Length: 472
Image 1 (cartoon, rainbow, N blue to C red):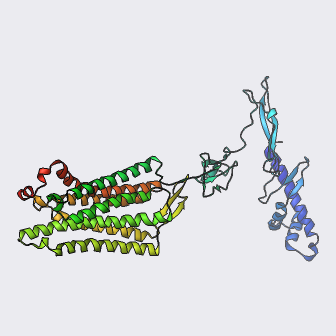
Image 2 (cartoon, rainbow, N blue to C red):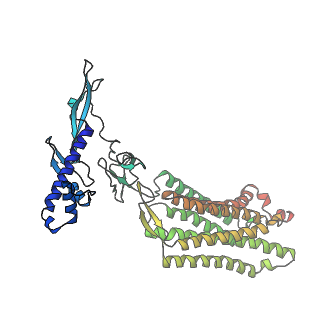
C-alpha cells in the first residue's frame, strides 16, 4: 500500500469512528427531536437529501483515537492531523543491481523530545560505504555560547547561530534564554562562562601613571628654578619691568598647578576626589588672573609714559592689580564652595564602561558645577587673550604682552580641545586626559611667559639693563 492510500485508509476509518461516537451520543437525545441528530440519522437512512452538517462531528474527529485494521494506533491532534509514527527508510542497492527500502528508524511524535526520532546507524548502508546517520534537523544545533536566530520567511526549523552578546553566556546547546554574568564578572571569549573583572585605576606604578608623575614633578622643579632665578635677579630691569609681585604669584600658582596633577594619580579616595578638581580650578584661576593683571600693568605703564604721568609709580596701580587677582579668585572659590556644599565629588566603582574591568574613579557629583568651574576658566582665559591681543603692538620695551598673548592662545587651544576629548574617553583614559590638559595649560603659560626672560637673564645679561630697554 502506498503512503497516499494508507492516509486515505486512515481518513475513512477516522470519519467512521467519529460518526459512531456521534450517533452514540445522539441515542439519548433522538427522542427529544434534536435537529443535528435527526439530520445525520435521516441522511444515513436515505430519507433526507440534506447536506450533512459537520459542526458537531468535528468535535469527535478532534478526539479521534482508534486502532485501524492493520493494528496500528491512529491519533488525531487538535488540528485534525494524524499524529502517527513514521518509518525512516534507507534505499539500499545490492550488488546484483536490485534495490530495496530498508527500515533504519522511526519517528514517534508522541514520544519525549529526546526519543521522538530513533535511528539505528548499524542498518544504514550508503552506496559508497559507511553508516553515518544523516542530520535530523534543517539546521545544526547552536552550541554553548550561541543562540538561535530564525530567518524571516523560512521554516521554523531553519535558523542560524549568533554568539551571545558581551556579558551574557549559555552553557547548554540550543538555549533560548541567556544568563547574565554578575557585575563583577564578564563573559569569556566563547560565551560559555564568566570570569572575574580586574580592579583598575591610574596607578603611579604603571607606565602611563609613572610618565605623568615624572612630567608633573619635572615641570614643578622647572618652575621652582625659574622662581629662584627671578628671586636672585629681582633687582634687574627685565625682572622689575612687569610687577615683581605678580610674577611671584604667577610662578607659585603654576607650581601648585603642576603638583595638583599628582592628586589625580592613584586610587581615588573621598579626600582626593574633593581636592583635585577644586584645587586645580582655584590655582589656575590665580594664574590666569595674574596674566591678565600683568597685561593690564603693561598697558597702564605705556599710557602713563605716553602722557608723562607718574601714576604707574603710585599705590593706586598696585591696589588695582591686587583687586583684579583677588576678585577673580573669590568668584572661583564661591563656585567651588557651592559645588562642595550641594553635590561634591565622590569615589565610585564603575562596572559598565569597560566590559572586563572594574574602574575606581571619581564621580563629579554635580556636572553643572564641574562645567561652571571649567567655563569660568575659559571665559577668564578668553578675556586675558583679548586684552593681550589688543595690546600686542606696544613698543618692544614692553614686549611681554606678546608672550602673554601666545600663552593665552595655547591655553585657549588646549581648553577648547579638552572638552571633546574628556567626553570621548572613559576609565583611566579620562583621568590621563585631565592630567595632560593640566600640564599643557600650565606648561604653556610657564614657557611663553618666563622662558624668554630667563633666556635674557642667563644668556644675554647685557640686554638686562635700563639703557638697553630705553634704546628699544
